[in-house]
Length: 297
Image (spheres, rainbow, N blue to C red):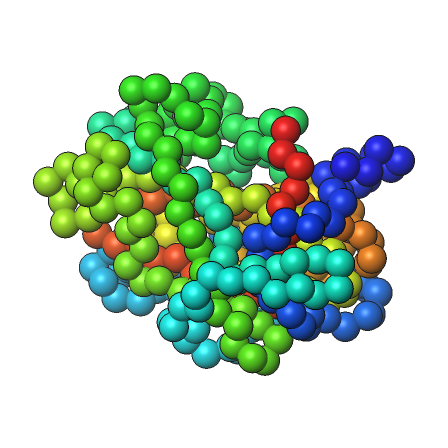
């Protein structure tokens, strides 16, 4: 972590052990010129979001993109096997490692609510590299700080943690994808499926770091909650229990908001929650070619 500048408190050195993608970077060297702010469901019309919820929970596609430029990289449904390849001083793999925590449907924040809910978390990541609850004292789809803090912390009797792999496909055009329209990574594990066809109640967190070279984009499409931070600053806020929605971080456009500069290495912290039955969509599209393991905590 760079202790020389307060604006880079979440910048981390590139490590030799890698999580991420491989070989080529799909970057331009242009300096960022504009700042578009956080990609958030706050940009979605409330009436549209309600209809998206109904349509998506019935199995129909309901997709909305907020912020930045939409990537056009195909379906990306074929997953790459894990592996690694040396790229100069860094060793990059094609598989990300995430922590999934299983919850029971009876948890106060799960299964009960429905609707978009931006603003669940603060714009700054916590000192423990976890989201900071911003409810006062709650939000439309959460029941308070104590229960929310259990989402991304191990709590005996409340959740059970598992490690999973997220393999990313090199699309051979400077972009990388993981796409799964039935994302149920812990079926029949933890507290089990609870008489459902899948295990629908879980959270996921993932930590990586990348060197900002200019031109990078990170996009997520899915349901339910998704909070993504770069350099400890919130870049995507898709909070709430809702159908499939998209958010994007255009690193150049959001450079001022995120406090990032070309040539430096920064953390990317990713927090997801699946809180309601019927479907689970999970897709990452990015032009970041190499993620490394950051120093957490």
